[in-house]
Image: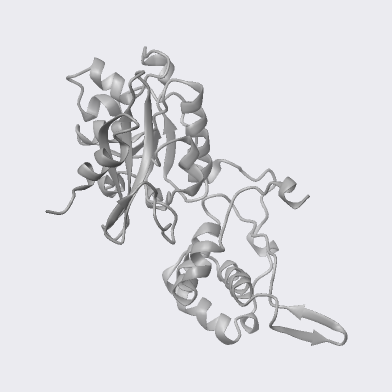
Length: 318
């Protein structure tokens, strides 16, 4: 009989502590990406280990990273026009699922930047931090990621009003209120709304629409033009953004060798670009996701391993 994920998790972690739960993180196609194993240790502390099925064998690691970053735990609970909670930890997600609420997590503060938050686009999002500094820091990082994907609203539960102890979380609150239903949770004080993401960075001096340069038809030339024209009818992204994203991506895939010469100057295909647009309305991220998905079909290794984000540590270049 084949070993179950729970049996494998217990076998692989028995020398660390007591295996409590192996939480499955599912890809968008329903397959399991990896498991996050919750372990209770003899000193009363908890720790976690990642586990994945690699070629039919369970090992303590996450496996190969999906093209669209690591999936969120609980994304399957999302429903159109329904609010979704973001919490810090799988136990909290399951606690909210148990009373009929949608909830997700990336797992913890160190996992925010590598998670795929795009399923939350268009949703009303409610952040419920743990009642401590790491919990608030986690939600600060989540909120920064959500600003790039176009959520309807983002609010945060006022943990100061819940009477929880230090490090108390939503599971602790629900344990203190065993008769609480979904409506009770949705009625919790969320203080002042953090933002409708379209207004996080309002322009101090709006620029009239006719002051912006327009993209001439001759710019959509050749293969690049065909790609952009094929996407535009099905996207809110601007044609200019799509064109720039495509040219930057294709130049990066080809690398520095293909080039042309203008007199004595050598011009490679690699480009550097900055897209500027209104938060949540500019569809900058939307334009990139269309091109990224296309390029992942053309050059899957490039999409998986050559596309990064975040800040660069300058010390690595010294």
